[in-house]
Image 1 (cartoon, rainbow, N blue to C red):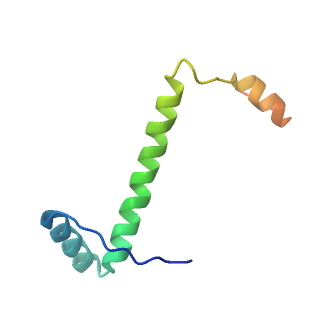
Image 2 (cartoon, rainbow, N blue to C red):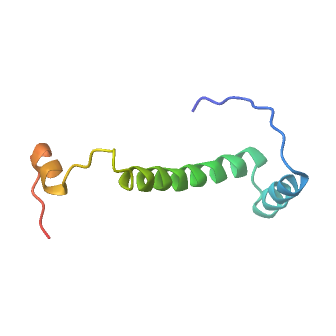
Length: 76
């Protein structure tokens, strides 16, 4: 995996939490931060999907049409 070094500014309370969990779990701080961001991006994916679902200007494709286009069988 390629890595990138970042210089970021965080509130001291967040830094304290990162240090606490890194020590408690015996993991590198970068791993704690990366894992937290991965989970947050999953949450953002859900928010984006909900936003698109509720956007009347966003085209919705019925599920049956979607699976028909994939030539996949869907059973209830």
